[in-house]
Amino acid sequence: MIKVVVVEDDNEIREGLRILIDGTDGYSCVDTYSECTSMLKNIESNNPDILLMDIGLPGMNGIEGIKKVKIILPEITILVLTIYEENDLIFDALCAGASGYLIKKTPPSKLLEAIKEAYNGGSPMSSHIARKVIESFQKKNSNVDKKNEYVLTRREKEILSGLVEGNNFKAIADSLFISVETVRFHFRNIYKKLHVHSQSEAVVKAIKEGIV
Amino acid sequence: MIKVVVVEDDNEIREGLRILIDGTDGYSCVDTYSECTSMLKNIESNNPDILLMDIGLPGMNGIEGIKKVKIILPEITILVLTIYEENDLIFDALCAGASGYLIKKTPPSKLLEAIKEAYNGGSPMSSHIARKVIESFQKKNSNVDKKNEYVLTRREKEILSGLVEGNNFKAIADSLFISVETVRFHFRNIYKKLHVHSQSEAVVKAIKEGIV
DNA sequence: TTACTACTACCTAATTATAGGTATTTCAAT
DNA sequence: ATTGAAATACCTATAATTAGGTAGTAGTAA
Image 1 (cartoon, protein in one colour):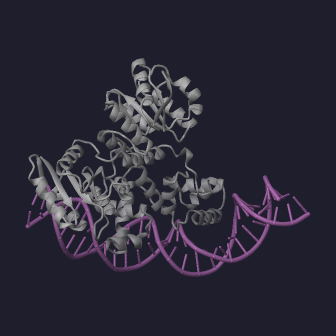
Image 2 (cartoon, chains in turn brown, red, purple, green):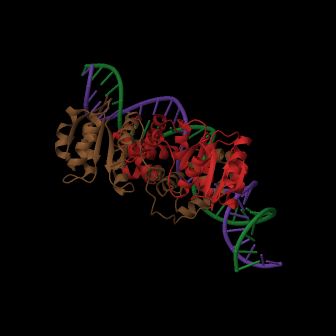
Image 3 (cartoon, chains in turn yellow, cyan, blue, brown):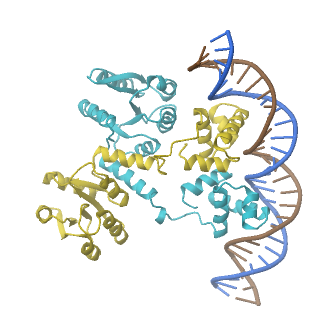
């Protein structure tokens, strides 16, 4: 039995979801709310598996609500309810702790399927949102608008990567099949370009500036 | 016209993909490879939109290959080819820079659709992989609950921070009003605790594990 | 062709880091 | 009162990095 709680300000949609969920074998709608505050008071005793949550809520912002719920029940699975699929709010919601989202106009069968998917450890979402998530997490240090003023050559980047991976000069030389002297030479140029004078400084810049 | 390059060691699959891609309007298979090394030599002149890449390759590991391709062509979209959907390697590949993946047994029409999806900025993937990605990136955006298995003392953390800020032993010693010998002593203990043997490795761990 | 950049490589020299041992003091907890 | 952890400091010795000069080759662009 998948226990669900719904937070949705539109009465029609909220009641529709409750009837759908309660009327389906294996699903139970333990409670519904029209806004976040009262949900936060009761969510611990509700103790649902899945929280369906509108992000276009009056009063407390849905994103804030997600963060607060996660503090109370860190293991809860939150699915965002949204009208438009391509919405920056969805991405923010995923950052805040949601695990996926549902489009409100989704047909009931697909909707139940998505809830089950989330319950079983999946994250229903469109491939476009997926890409945004991936890109965000690939460049973890938000080097979006961080245009590299440091123009390292390909080889220099390779060598710097070797350092960040924990190798010393000899190991880098061996891995690239070049002499240690050549590695030294490259590091001299890398240091000049980055305006640093040691491995540690170079590693910090490489990571923080997103060079590697 | 979506330009595709394929890296796949199985001749049958590779040629099948080439024929499928070249035989479809709007798609072009500019080249195919059976392993990474020769692909890396030519990828720049191939200059494809999409790189389809097996991760179970002989010779160079597919993950390594992805990283190296990204150095050469940072804007390329990489899709991983895989036999099994639920594979830790897929997650590693996404970390390394891939944007999604394709299951080899996928029917041709779906396969082309996924390529177009990726070309248009999407990330085709299952909801389970999506969840793993989301969880990983939620974790990275909040190292609040990151239990440090590395238990450094307060002084050791101070000293390690000094290193990350770009100081050498003497500068750290001066800033903390202690002798260089003491700094050395602390670093010996820090290295033991972090299981590293150099400043660079210590800096990388300090940043990535959120110690500082 | 010429000029320029990138990559390769060797040389010397000085500085810094790594690795080990040892010892004293302080402070908190048993 | 004693133990133990943390921080301080000095010692020796080896290994590695930093900094400089120099030079050949390959490829590319003017």
